[in-house]
Structure formats: structure tokens, C-alpha cells
Length: 134
Image (cartoon, rainbow, N blue to C red; front, side, top):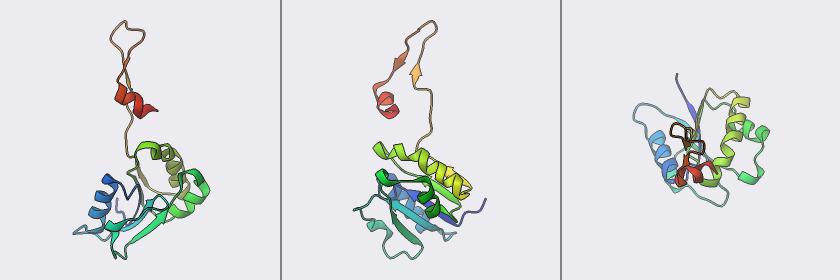
């Protein structure tokens, strides 16, 4: 599958900046990137790149319809969100589907977080997993 336009959420974070850097300076392809960052934040790594459009999004004011408009024409959505911003990922995924985006790459993949030994009715939930689940 050939991607031209990538929507990148969390483009100002540690991982997001690296993803944006690689997409912007890919040696064999000229990606167009829509870099979504929180309001009142900047994206210094974008520089003067004419292929990168910086879009501000507020987690408290997101709507599926509004976000779908911003995602129209994108071939893929990459989520580099973390922490509290992960709460917005399902809404972003729904908006991407509504806009007809072909691929959605979440920032984290799920797994069953409770470990149960045979015949253990309670199980064990690691504190780190518990935090991620919240």
C-alpha cells in the first residue's frame, strides 16, 4: 500500500518527534504530514518543511465530525500519544474510519493485563499494567 499523506498525533512528544523527523526526511519518499499537537505547544523539529502542516487539537474539545474533516485525504493515521492523551485514541480512530483513512496505527497494542495461575480466582495485576489500564 502506498501512502502519501500521514496524520501524526502526538508529533511533539519524544516518539512523535522521531517519527516526524523520519517521515520528513525519508530518502525515497516525499510524505505529506499533518502533525497534530496540543494547543500552546510548538513543533520546532518541523522547521521550514513545506510538506508538514501543523494542526492544533484540544483533547477537551474533540469531536468525531470535526476531526474527520481534518483527516480527510489522509492515507494513514499514526498515534504517538501517551499518558492522558491516550483517552482520545478511540475517538481519533473512529474519526479516521469516518474520513475513510486506510490505516490506523495505535500508539499501544492491548494485551490481557491480569495474570492468573491455574486455579487462582483472583490473579495478579502488575502496578505498571494497572496504571496503563487506567
